[in-house]
Length: 233
Length: 233
DNA sequence: AAGTGGTCTAGACCACTCC
DNA sequence: GAGTGGTCTAGACCACTTA
Picture 1 (tube, chains in turn green, red, blue, orange):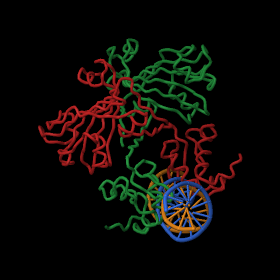
Picture 2 (tube, protein in one colour):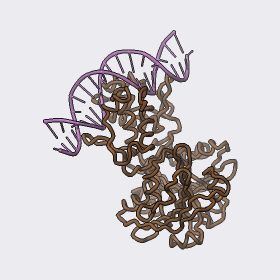
Picture 3 (spheres, rainbow over the protein chains, first blue to last red):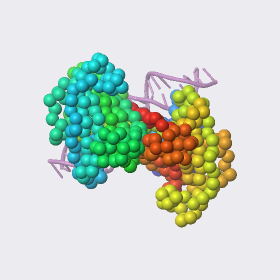
Picture 4 (cartoon, rainbow over the protein chains, first blue to last red):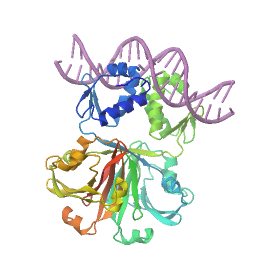
């Protein structure tokens, strides 16, 4: 049990991870308190706390005052998912990213979008459709609604240089939002844009972005056939 | 600029978030160093550090020694994605979760799986197929390969009470893994199991789980039609 | 060389919660 | 009431990066 020398929080964390993976501490087990662990590892309680807090935040440990720290019963895997700008994602693959605005109009949004936007019925919102290409191959089709009440300057925005995606990020650093991932059947319209067969199964992302409690934009991204969103545990 | 009273790290973090959202600090801007912020907020540098480190970890700030802290130029949105047990996910909706083992056999895996498993060519691996239902409605179809070298006890495991999913989590708390999300076209076989039309677009998750550098299991989960994976930013 | 973040320490007090 | 985690503090030293 050579536990000496663990005087920094990362090595403490690694040791704790190891003990859980090796079943030295099993799911549901109470592990020693911070003071005792600090003694064992030869570091201060602060360092142990730093190590354990992150593990608890990641779902591997359950911590309660007085009750102590237990190995989580159902180790919920918490993956970190990076949602980069489309341009950054494409360029990270070494491809050239271009975008084209296919549609730009003010019109009442469909009911499903309106509800999310809390717009008046029949109120016109800015509707944009854009296609992003990687080395001139269709990559993702963007169908976006923007709330002009929240971002009035969007009316005169020029999306030829900065894509809607980038323009919005710069204008309105969003503080909240939710994301949903799903599969969708390729419609004939989308098929023409993405150069894929109608009826194909396509990966789609629906994202709603909020700022100061108001919905800024609601967007659906439909990716090219075969697209995979990867991440690590 | 009433910045007094921010003597705990959460309120410091909130104030920093606010300044970025309100464009007081713009993308690319250098923000004051920790010592100055500590003075301004009337707290110790440790507290400021705690607040800023988490923001940097979340991608909102870029920090470099000597160069200082800047608001990230491309604010990468980092969503936290919880990957619960299938049973937990279904029961969280208030439904009753059941599972049935449809296939259980030792056989050589297809090439695509073998490569990931680093198995010998034609080496037999354990192949499982299972269906999970929510209130007896098909929810997700699981197609899994398990490496018996890593988990020998899997050969005699009983999956009637504990699903393969749960059994593995208890036996081998994985420490690593990767996940990919994609859309897939429903094959006739899967259609029969999930009670959906062949050709439908289905959401699928491919997951590979590692323990101590070895692949434990490789699984594809194909969800029922209309399934959406949600998360928040 | 110097400025900045990264981390550790020892001690302290508080908040929660189980008994 | 008592044990545990949550957090703050002041100070210190180190590691890295830029100038």
